[in-house]
Image (cartoon, rainbow, N blue to C red; front, top):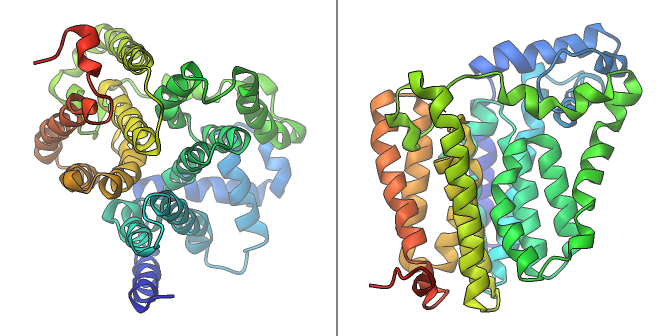
Length: 371
């Protein structure tokens, strides 16, 4: 192992351990009480109760943390899963970058870029959030698609979806690959099957299957905010227009997804590895920017894929820098910074989409958009 890589890993571990004692609002009001509820209600049998608003997949970790790691400080036990996934996510990033640079050096830098990213550190070790878990599933999905392994790719996506509904941000890429016959339609049932297997233990414990199947619908109706600390276009729309803007935003997003799929289909070009990474980045970038009801953490998959994008297209490294800065300042929660970076992030997204003909020549001509 190169010395710089070893030093980077050691530093990444140390800084996470330093951040562990911090108790975020979500930790105090959700993660910590959930852990205690599992302990006081008999461990596994606690899952028959509706005491959490996540899918049960993440709560299984809290069960393990409260039993197998009962001798470990509670806050470390809770955060340990996400912090471990930081390195697994970085490993899949390494694998993806190594497909382009086979000597491994650039892949090592990509690995370090992930584990040392401020938002990655902030999300798992400081806040105790689990966005890295579903994002790792998405990055694994992209990797397996890159090496033409459909079943592991769809299993990875299903695992991601069983943790967070935001895994759906990758669906534009999956739709395109379906249309281009890179993914077979008859493998799609793998995704709901994985989700069903994930909720099965909670159902066995006694929680009604209807509640488990409708968790994401309950989440969607919990917050009535157009934008919750997220640097997207809805920062500039007053929340009093919520009921009008939400359906319009959803329609705009669906239209954008199908338009992108149509343009790529009409291009009749093969989905090369560079094009796959480009489309994956557009997918996870455009969805949280165009959709209403987003939170600041929902650009997490964009944070990771923008790093991969920077290694595949080094002339556009500034794209990754722009995304990282926007995400980091949104985590700080300062309104003026969030509004400013919603503009810079919008420009960055516009640039990435506007220059898609870099890898899909003449794609704009299909809508008469050529200069």
